[in-house]
Length: 474
Image (cartoon, rainbow, N blue to C red; front, side, top):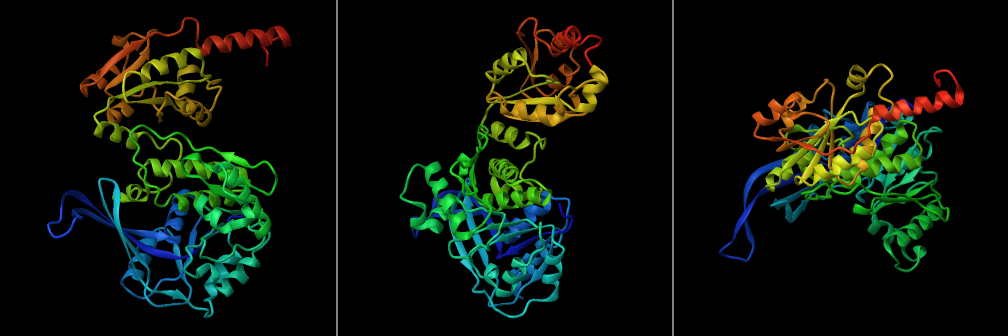
């Protein structure tokens, strides 16, 4: 693991989203009339990948790209300044700008402008300097010439040993260099890049495996991860059996906007490799972050109002889900607890709770609050693992964490329509009751399978260990 910056190299552009409403057609043509509600400018292409990487990593991020000395180029550089250092490579012409006009969550038209292209002129000394101390490098190739610059390719070929290089390719872009740690095409790109070498069209996973294996051999790279949208991603390192990282199921009411998902995937993979992770870990985490990014509304939603587009790491909370469910008129159900050693009693109650509304949010005690409630030897299962197990249940739509002894502060923000606890509690004695009812919610007690509890499981395990090993079972 190297501690230098994460360097992103590639074609950056200015993205503009015009969001509005479309309730009528134009009288002079059968096209919708869009009333502009909000116009948002943001980095696109390699600029988006760099900003996403900056939100994920604790290391510095440097963007090596081509932008012109024009209004769009200056605005792009201004937008990147809080997140990454921008180092320019030579170009001529005007900067690229892509404008989407959207209404009701759908893109109606895209308008592109800018004729800039990279020239073969000499690179400034800063490029060699940042690559010489890079901790990881991500090439975000949008086919506009940065990744093909001869000087950059020579520097990338001479990266110090141990510096992971991730390459997000483009069918019209440069060929990845031999020895690249991970190449991340989407399914259509992999099909186009592999061509006949990947064989005839087959089922999606079979075809992705063939294409990825063909590209590993052709490019002489360590691995190729083909992103498959809602199916997740498939990784090939040239062996017959590929590695598949499934995507989590989408939450109720999700409006998918996949714009930027590939950049999120590549940035997340580079982030994991930068931290010393292996390729399978990088692909698994990249799928999780890209899926959360899409579920949160894509790049337009994640960058609105100053929110960081970090790809929604675990523990970010259920707020987008709750908003979508409420906008659709659904009821939000919530429950809470330690959930240390998830057992049949928990699962039974969670399934019943989910039937009471459109989504179920589980509020989980942090490790510190579990220790304060249960004693210094608890929890047996750390928070990250408890959240992962809960999130894997089909009946659980989101997980949120609270540090206090009760979730009262969390409920002040969540304001569920229904708060659920097991029947072993009394509604009148719950600290949460007053908070839930003050915001118009109701408290419900559900049957709890008799004899199931974490404390009993722990006691039984200790008794068994004592019999087998003697003493206290330690």
